[in-house]
Image (cartoon, rainbow, N blue to C red; front, side, top):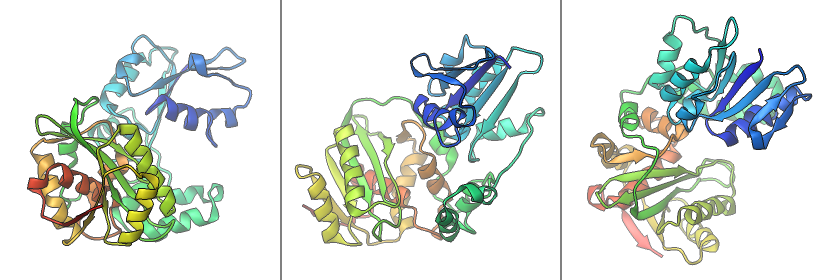
Length: 345
């Protein structure tokens, strides 16, 4: 193989995971020379790997390879369009091949790829990699996700179909996904704080409303294992980056703490506390209806949040990212929500 394509969801992903990551090419083949400015890797035998972002499928045009490594395919913004361009570029050598590595998700592009007659599938469970993981990592995942639909996907490498009992359908999200968004008249950061310190995931979602009455989901800053100061800093980062108008935070758990840490991180921000008075499914129904009506667009791909949306049926672990999304849309579309108790700070 002389000409290789390394394709990640973004250039940053390709560099930080595929090239410079713990198991990246520079660790496996340290003799290779990485030229970040030229976006390529050189080997002593003359082989060259071009580093490409899947964000711009047309950028693949003009390239030609005899091998491609495509990583986290299901995370790509336009997986089918990018795949089509890659297949057209696989035209060198006597037997050009592509290796696709990804966490499986229920998207049409992956299912079509798996159904191709010349596709060979291999599956690796998280348990197969335990010797290379921190001792508490796998145990923690098993406790949280073992036996769940999300666990079967993330831990056992299964492609899980949409849950018929879930409020969202992946087709509604895919149909209205966009790459760009118009001028927004309102922009909020919604927060679903974790119940325990440095424990559960903190849901942090950014969404805005356009003049025509359609919403755009711009970011998912959610993360687990954060202290109160840590997730407040994440909220502040999102708020500043997107120049948001306000923060909306659920305060059923630790209301005074939520108020204090947010104002410490964002002393000049408009912060609103909301209290859930109904179950998650009931509160989420108006938001799901907006998706069915085509009034909500995801700007890019948010795999973890979309998995929660399309799998949660009222049972299992708390969908913190989905909860934050629901609070954001309730704030942007107050006429459609079941009225919560609200207290402005």
